[in-house]
Image (cartoon, rainbow, N blue to C red; front, side, top):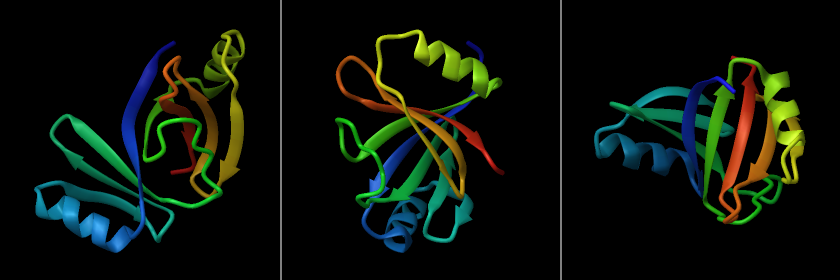
Length: 115
């Protein structure tokens, strides 16, 4: 599996105040899609902010998930289906998602972004 990119997503209550906070500690706002998602970066780190709500499928750790962008989304799907993990597929404004958990319950996902 060849991972192209990755980020850590933090579930937040208020996008505006969270973006402002992360900017105040030195991160740069790279992208924002209204109140659906925002990406902020620091050297060597991409953090995504997502509004916390009942529609987001948290499986274990609650406020944090780690996301990966694969070079080949179908290959990622096949690889996950060969493992003993439960995969939840989801489509939304930002793209296609494959949600799953590591053995300790950490929320992970692969994304095929629309951007």
